[in-house]
Length: 417
Ligand code: ADP
Ligand code: ASP
Ligand code: MG
Image (tube, rainbow, N blue to C red):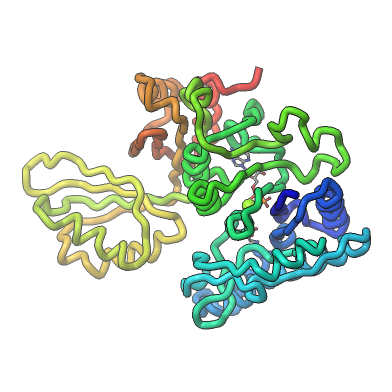
C-alpha cells in the first residue's frame, strides 16, 4: 500500500466549497488504497492579510510575534479540512507543525526544517486516519512557532513526504509546470516531465509554482514529486493516466530525452532591484569591503557587473539584490562609504530578471546569442547578464518583462502548436 502526501495551496482551499472539493480528492486517494497525509496552506489572501496586520501595528516588528500571527492561517484550513473529511466518512485529524513536531532552526520568518518526527503520523495513517498538517511552519529551538518563508507549504509537504517515505503531489491552480507562467504567456504549454535541476532553476528564477527549497529537498531525498490541479474534478477519468505519467507534471531525475529541448522554460522575477556605485577605487579589497557588510546584513547579491577601469584608479560597479532589501542595503553601504571610497550611488527598483532554462544548453552553442538577438529586435536593453551551466539570465527594464518573456518563449520554439 502506497504512502502519499497531498499538498493543497491557497486558491485550492480558498473557500468552504473548495475545501469540500479537496476532501473529495483526498477521498479518491484513500479509496484507491493509499495511506494519506495532507499538507495545507492558508486560504488565499489570508497570509497577506496577516502580514499586513503585523505591518500596520508596527512597520518593524518582533519576528517571533510575526510568526505567531502568520502561522494561524494554516491552522484554520487544517481544522476545516479535517471536519470536511469527517463529514464524508474519512477519519481525519488536524496537526499544527509544533504538535508533530516539525523541528526547525531559530530563524524566525524564514526558518529551515531540521527534523520531523513522523512516528505518530505513520501509526495513525496505518490505522486509516488522514493527518491534515499545517504547512509553512514548525517549532524552533526556543519552543516557539517558526514559519518557513512565503510559499513554504510546498517545502513542508516535500519534507513530510521525505520523513514518511511517501510520494508527494502538489495540487495547485494550474494543472502542472508550464514552459512559462501561463498567466502571462498564453502560448505556454504544460510539460509532462521536468528534471529536478531545471525545476530548481525555474523556481529560484521566479516561477512561483514551487518554492525553491521544496525542489532542493525533493532532489536530495529523491521524493517522487508531481504538480497537478485541484480544479480538475476529483472523479474525472483524467486523474489516473493508465500509462503512469500522471495528470500533471512529474518532477524527476533527468534522462536523455529531456536534453532534446535546448530551452525548457522562460522564467521572470520582478522581485529585483539594482544599485550602481560610481568611481569606486580600483584596488584589491574593495569588492570585499562592499559585499562583506551586505552579506553580514543577510542581503544576497545576485548579478554583479564591474566596468573596466578607464584610468586605472576608479571603476563603476553595478549589482542586483532582492527588492525588499534595497532600503537596508542603501543604509549598509552608507555606513561603509568612507572605506569603499565611491563617489556617488544610484539605485532602481524598476528592473526585472528574465531567464531561460534548459539542460540541453550544456550541449548546444548559440543559445545566448539567440537570446540577445531576440531582445535586441524588440528594442530591449540588457543591463546585466549572468549564466550558469543550464540557465542564462538578463536584467532589463521592468516595463518590458512580459514582452521579453513572450518573445523568448517564441524564439526558443516553446509556443504550443
Ligand atoms: P499555490 O497557492 O497553490 O501554492 P502559487 O500561486 O504559489 O499556488 O503557484 C501557482 C502559480 O504559479 C500559477 O497560478 C502560475 O501563475 C504561477 N507560475 C509561474 N510560473 C509557472 C510555470 N512555469 N508553470 C506553472 N505555473 C507557474
Ligand atoms: N500561506 C503561506 C504563504 O502564503 C505559505 C504557502 O501558501 O505556501 O506564503
Ligand atoms: Mg505556492
